[in-house]
Image 1 (cartoon, protein in one colour):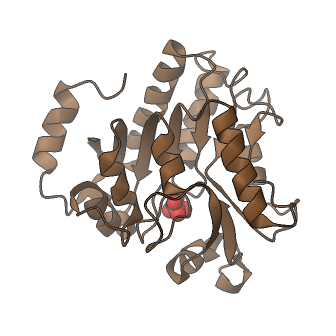
Image 2: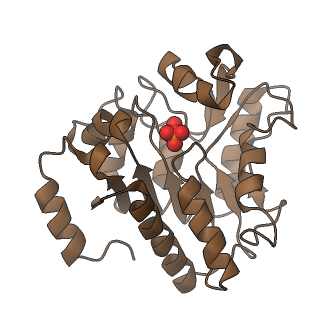
Length: 261
Ligand code: PGA
């Protein structure tokens, strides 16, 4: 794990965009894994800038969302497919086409089957080359809530009450409006991505960040499974990194070693 600690979320997001742009310049047409939530928004803005400058393009790429709410109307603005379209799709954004943005099919009558189909689609595409991740205050990645299998594939999942509360801000501050279930890539699915780039900002993520980097691997903090992944970059701000015991070492390692092949 490479841990980059930055003064602000903005600096960390700029670094994240730089890493993605460099990765795609070396490996154009790579498959990108997309996160939603507030965390990657500055990163996506930087990618749009890089596209406008001619430094980056998703024209020839597939992109797979990490997760999607179940039970929402297809035109709801908070449906993750619609959020990601707003952020990235089109020749005025990053060149990603609507057809190449892949999200779980929530119009399927059986979410379990939709999950299996989504897993198969990721595998048929040859897997994800670079997966962007956020992290929940409860340690979830994707929507893999605490207590699930560390080896799960894409599946139908319930949202923990902490997540319903955290996401209420996207639904008129009313947690009752947040969908109760979702389809999420599983932890094994995420572990199958070749490279992972996780961002976490703010004090509310401090415990999750500490557990992710320094805690024991446990289903209680699902993101800790990433300690077993060979290529993970974690970009954090000072606020979320405040309880890391070994931050000095992470800073030195960040300065002296390469982060990603
Ligand atoms: P956030 O959510 O970026 O909105 O904080 C992250 C997550 O739940 O994975």
